[in-house]
Length: 106
Image 1 (tube, helix red, strand yellow):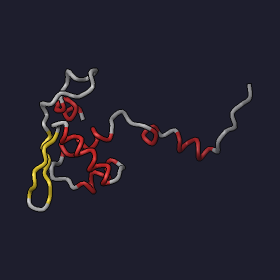
Image 2 (tube, rainbow, N blue to C red; image 1 turned 135 degrees about the vertical axis):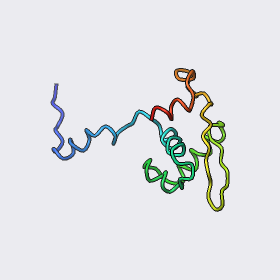
Image 3 (cartoon, rainbow, N blue to C red; image 1 turned 30 degrees about the vertical axis):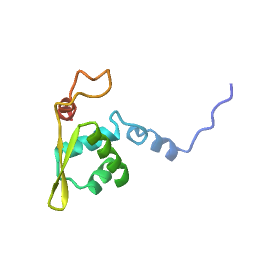
Image 4 (cartoon, helix red, strand yellow; image 1 turned 90 degrees about the vertical axis):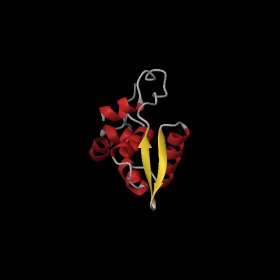
């Protein structure tokens, strides 16, 4: 069996950072958690903290609104978000828990 060629040390060390490859929570949950922590947070800040584009944040917020997980209210020139903590999580494995349970853990 042939040996795999080794990558340079710099490339190996950069690839071992687990957060760079995947995380336990989705971008949807990251956006949700940030809005729960600060309901008046602007989308640019959310996008920067999550590491995605503002447009991606807008799509996620639309998904969360459509699912009834958050509600948006206009306050002056910005939006305020209310997380509905009593909504059950969507996947069958965790459907016995609520959005509030998830936000409370973090």
